[in-house]
Amino acid sequence: MEFFVAQILTGLANASSLFLVACGLSLIFGVTRIVNFAHGSLYMIGAYVGYSLIQVLPGVVGFWGAILLAGIVVGIIGVLIEMLVLRPVYKAPELFQLVATFGVILVIQDLALIIWGPEDLLGPRSPGLRGVVRIMGEPIPKYDLALLVITPFVALSLWYLMTKTRLGVLVRAATQDREMVGALGVNQAWLFTGVFGLGAALAGLGGALQLPKGGADLLMDFNILTPVFVVVVIGGMGSLPGAYLAAIIISVLNVFGVTYVPQSTLVLMFIVMIVVLMVRPYGLFGREEVAGEHGQVGEPERPIKPASNKARMIVGAGLFLLALLPIFGSSFSLVLATDVLIFCLFAASLHFLLGTGGLVSFGHAAYYGGGAYVAALLVTHANTPMELAFLLAPLGAGLAALAIGWVCLRLTGVYFAMLTLAFAQLIWSLVFQWGDVTGGDDGLLNIWPAEWLKSTSTYFYFTLILAVSGIILLRHIAHSPFGYALRAARDSKRQAEAMGIDTARVQLFAFGFAGLMGGLAGALFVFAKGSVFPNELEIARSFDALIVVFLGGVKTLAGGVVGAGFFKGIEETLLRFEYWRLLMGLLIIFVVIAAPNGVVGSLRKGLERSGLIKAGDQ
Image 1 (cartoon, rainbow, N blue to C red):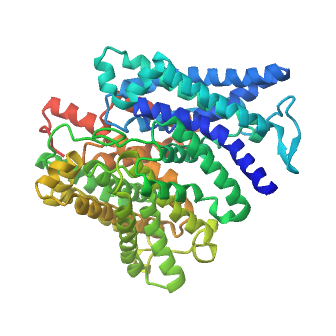
Image 2 (image 1 turned 90 degrees about the horizontal axis):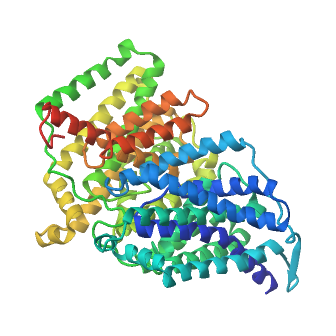
């Protein structure tokens, strides 16, 4: 009994920082609808700023003063981010802001590296709270007990702010209906800025508070980001009580999981999220979404027409020049072009799902990496010929997508997106931990193509033909009756069903087909590299695809392809510099602000104004 009490107290203490960061994210999303990927970076900055302030502010008062000042400093940084980066793109398609926040992540990563260096910083002990207290014979750190007092105090302060003040009334009103708040004369711009600053301050406070428990390092942002999103989704987007309860549930279960089932720690919180969302589709205290909210892409600005003959001639000329690369290019350029083509197909498969279907998936790497692993497993354990393994890989990924889609499509918006991420994380965990079969972290090696494809130039042509054919097939289906039915389900599900369209079946088939094409890209990848590792299934790979789709332009059929080519080309160029993340982040932010419709959307508008193409040509 004593041990269980100690474990619960430890879990409650661990929930403190998680709650502070989660409630900040929940506030920001509830009012602004921003899916803030940079929230983990604000948490990291809070830890680093707190560490620096503690070094110059001595004693107990100095320690706690540094913690509070860290939250204030990060809040000011959050205000600057909102005003300089996010405010210019509020009118862009929903979820487009996540591209801007991804750029902020890269900028903060390198700025932290420049200011504080690459070494992990050991967190200082809290004056007066060193040592342990024995409760029922079990040692409990004094600082953990302090956190057990601080977190409810912060939660009660937020409750008072939200329920007893005018600001709280406005925030709650904006969470329910921000358009009506604007119609009543409230300055939404400053309301959004204030809420973003408050959310950032809470993240910074959470980062500073965890210093005595873990210190500060450059991986803090990504380590906290996924648990925070899981907590917010389980509790219900925009619900502070939900975030508090979910943080406690996740933290306590994780403590017991580490003790009794260590293998479960990688996926335990995702399993909890899946169970909760199956029972309560909008989280424990969330509310049902309405059309146009919570990350739905929305309808295009104009009907999308097939590409004109002039556009096809331009694309054909480009492909002809690309086909000449083995004659005039180097071996490195062939390898780079092969990688770009594969990534373009991967991004195009996600763009079909996201742009044409309006289904925002955070776990699309499950099918890309899944296709690669199906091929690699067949070659490694069944001695399957490359040709057969290559055919079966996308089929395996497509079947997995159908199974996952059948569960996930019961939800919408960010809840749908997070559930796709949860299943992707389950697949990654299976691959990562089942070392006897998948090779675990060491991956699977020696997965080479057949003899007739071993030449670099031959495999380039093989990839060129399949990648271009796959992208053309995706575009053809987008303009087929099935594609129009999918768009109808995206734009107005009720009207589509009234017209006799089985929207559930259409979206499920689209999900499976996108997974199949992602699996095809994965099969091309594994035979191009001769190996595959679990990182091809990670969340970061899914986010890479999301970034390039939004960067290229969600509301254009070429957005995924152009965005992928643009992103990969710039990445290869900037990787030569020491602080390439800073340069990449600034470039992404510039593109987002200068081209809020994406690269393709902005370029298309320019060509339309010049008369080179007709409106709506794709």
